[in-house]
Amino acid sequence: MIKLSIPHLAGNERKYVDDAVESTWIVPLGPYVDEFEHRLEAYLGHGNVVALSAGTAAIHLGLVMAGVKSGDEVVCQSLTFAASCNPIVYLGAHPVFVDSEPDTWNMSPRWLEQAILARKEATGRYPAAIVVVHLYGMPARMNRIMEVAEKYGIPVVEDAAEALGSEYDGKKCGTIAPYGVLSFNGNKIITTSGGGALICPDAEAASRVKFLSTQAREDRPYYYHTVIGYNYRLSNVSAAIGCAQIEELAERVDRRREINQLYRQGFAGVRGVTIHAEPDSGIKSNFWLTTVLFDETAVSRTPDEIRMALLEKGIETRLIWRPMHMQPVYADAPYYGEKCDESIFDHGLCLPSGTTLTDNDVQTVINAIIELL
Ligand SMILES: *Cc1c(COP(=O)(O)O)cnc(C)c1O
Image (cartoon, rainbow, N blue to C red; front, side, top):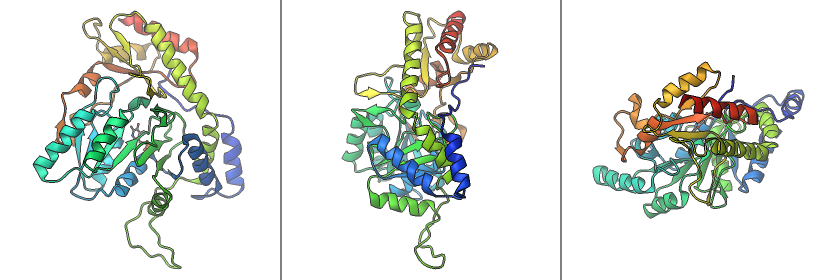
């Protein structure tokens, strides 16, 4: 079976986990949590990283730190995974979805501004925050997004759960907006079995996030609480796995980019098949997943028919994230756009992209798809 993306062990996982167990640091927190945070900070060239139990938890706390409250509205790109916007609802706030642009597949700066103005008109208030996503590792147009956000004074949470190692204008994704989110779930570019991180703007914010993620316990001899807390810190054992995984991160990014290159070469000149590429030189994707668009005028099968035919040949692919405004649970949320995201969903497919794949595996996928066209 050629899988979409599976965990890839780096080498030192067992050693560090054994050490964590032997030193009885199997409880939450401990030296590996600090070490993992330091290694992430070194890789990102940005301080104030807080390791958490999931990327979803990081989005939740990012929104808390942005000041989102019950009854607020938060703008989010519609073409994403539900974890980007579910935390908006955890806070009693309401998501407002916006369309993607065709070249990055991410939040359209133009529709973002339209949505902000329309919500001000409709509710008398600006949205309380913006969640922008670097989908499949492809960076969003952060300069334009930040320009619009700053124009209206709206804080941004950057969902880089799929984009660790991606760069925009030489800056690592996750470090561009005041708050950035990483995920170390099983199928992401590196994993801690489950985990995430919130990249904070300064030491004071990071300290507040640590406080909130450990039950908001005040510094007193008895338990004393002035705000609602969460149990969101990463465990020391998970962080030990992360310390091993990050040792290979640079190679993992290079390999995912190489796999993308192999797909591009393999489909060069094939009618109706477009591998999603970086639109300009300021945008560098980690190509967490290589994605493809099929042109319906040249390809007789739908992406789902191609997916099922590939599955029969032992090749796992996945349809594009179904936009949030098309989800029953978000049927009532406002949407601003021209359905570019729906078109990507209708025509796209995610190809096997994990770093455990050989060049031969990639060629097998390419040949199988060409046979089906
Ligand atoms: C994986 C993912 C998340 C959530 O991360 P978890 O660690 O699984 O909670 C959020 N946003 C996007 C875009 C993701 O792909």
